[in-house]
Structures are given as structure tokens and as C-alpha cells.
Length: 343
Ligand code: NDP
Image (cartoon, rainbow, N blue to C red; front, side, top):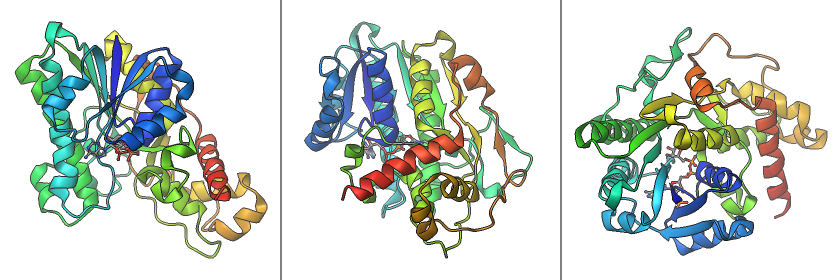
């Protein structure tokens, strides 16, 4: 049987595919274009026998998704816009997030012989915390926290960050509601990651063009490609996870029976932008850092000034461990510097 992965061309999706293929799963990657299909096929050329594709231009197309689900036993649903470069928040953020999720579930429920056993849905830390409350020192976010944002908040705001956060909570709530009302034969598992960092599966994933770098990694690249005279930009979302650990969490959420109908916060803990600058200064070549890494207030940390996370449920049920921040940051930046140098 085959595992369907949506958002296959994305930063996290491509790592999830790598993890599945490494574990010898048959994978069907859902992409939006021939171009992305060829790109993934070339990156994963050594896994030709295990990897197939479905081109679904519109993630809200019931019939296209049904077709893609032939022979599929499990789904990892990651496709969702994560960008603030949007004009129409409803059409470009809210709708694909919400209707993408509900259409996946409807199509899965319509497949014959209760063929689909589980859908793992990638929600977000954005669907957990209440950003309007500010930094919230002392608060520990867990799986029992839900963002108060709703569709109207995302549709009426001028701030794309609010619209993105709203898109994630409405999509997740719709998934739980579908489960409760439709009682499909499959179960679900919901993964909520904070800022996801780490190297790309391959530079080819962004066509070796740093302008195509995904949103979260761009936070690190923004610091790595400043000038020594710049300030360290303020830290916005001060919790993180390594993409490789998160990919394992997704696959384990698919196969572990205890993950059935559970929500998981998969967070390695706190970070701040000063820490990124300090790590880079210590580990990237002196010539490079002397020009490009802002100094800021060396050694100053945000510890104790912001909310934190408790991921003990994910550790216990999904059996994951967390990569340390130094390694994640340096693995990513070394790769990005190589891509930049190859131009
Ligand atoms: P990327 O931008 O790298 O990937 C997004 C993926 O979703 C791409 O495959 C993209 O396809 C696809 N996609 C985007 N918009 C649509 C759409 N309208 N219809 C169909 N497919 C679409 O982001 P990530 O890999 O970081 O994000 C993957 C998931 O993880 C998302 O659900 C995101 O909300 C969630 N997440 C990410 C976090 C992070 O820090 N990165 C944190 C928390 C959650 P294409 O390549 O064709 O554009």
C-alpha cells in the first residue's frame, strides 16, 4: 500500500518523503506542476521504484484528490500556503488551508473498502498560541491550547501573519469537526510544529535560488546575510524544531497506534535571533562572519521573557529526540552558503 503526501515539493514535505523512502514506504507525492514533479523525481532518483506522483493543480478538487488516492492507505497532508506575500488573504491563505483539509478528508472518506486508515495533518504552533497576548513569560503551551482566531479574523485583518495563523486554526478545527460529525473509518493525527529550521533535502528543491527559500528558514538566512553593522532583528516566534526530527514525527504519527486522534506539539524549545548570530559567528568562516553577521548583544538570551513549550507528549508517544540548535543552524547555513557560492 502507498502513502500519499501533499505539499510534497515543500521544505517539510520533501523531508517527510525522504524519511518515508528511507523506511521503504511506497510514496505518492502530490505536486501542483510537472516542473515540481521532475524536480522531486531528480532529487529522489535513487528511489524510482518506491516514488510515484499525482499532479493535483487545485488542492480543493475532490475528483482530482479521489484519483490521487487510488491504492493509498495513509495520507500526510502538509500542503498549505506558508507565505506572507499575499494580496487576497481569503483566496490565497484561508481557502486553500481550510478547503484543502476538508476536501482531502471528504475524498478519503469516499474511497472504497475503508481503504484509508489514517490522515496525519500538519497544523501549527500558530493554531495553539494566542499571539494577541504578547510574549507571555511563564506560560507553557501544550496540546490543550487552541488559538482563538477564526475565519473572520483572517479575512478582516491587514496583517498577513494574523491571516496565516487563522488559516491554520480554521483548517485544524475543521479536521476535528469532520472527524466528529462524519465518523469516517480513518483516524487522524495532528502535528503542530513551531518555527521549523534545517537544511533542505537538496539545493535543487529551491532551484538553487535563495530567493525561493521557504519562509521559516529565511529567518535564519536573514541574519546570516546581513552586515556586521546591522542590528540583530527582533525574535518573532521564539520556539523551533529541526525539520529532520519533524519529518520523523510525521512518519511515526502515521504508524503508531497510540497517535490515533491525537494532537502533538513537536517543539525542541526556545531560541532567539541573537543566539543564531552567536552560533554563526562561532562556526562559520571568520572571513564571512566579519562582513555579514550582525554583532548585537553577544550572549544575551530571551530566556524567561517569552512563552515556552512542553512537547513531552510527542517525545513519549512519537518517540522522537531533538537535534541541538547549533547543529540545525550550521547545517542550514553551510548549505545555503554553498548554494550561494555555486551561483
Ligand atoms: P513550503 O512553503 O516549503 O511548502 C508548502 C507546500 O504546500 C508546497 O509543496 C506548496 O506547493 C504547497 N502549497 C502551498 N500553497 C498551496 C495551495 N494553495 N494549493 C496546493 N498546495 C499548496 O512550506 P513548509 O514546508 O514549511 O510548510 C508545510 C506545512 O507545514 C504547511 O502546512 C505549513 O503551514 C506547516 N508549518 C510550517 C512551519 C514552518 O516553520 N515551516 C511551522 C508550522 C507549520 P508548491 O511547491 O507548488 O508551491
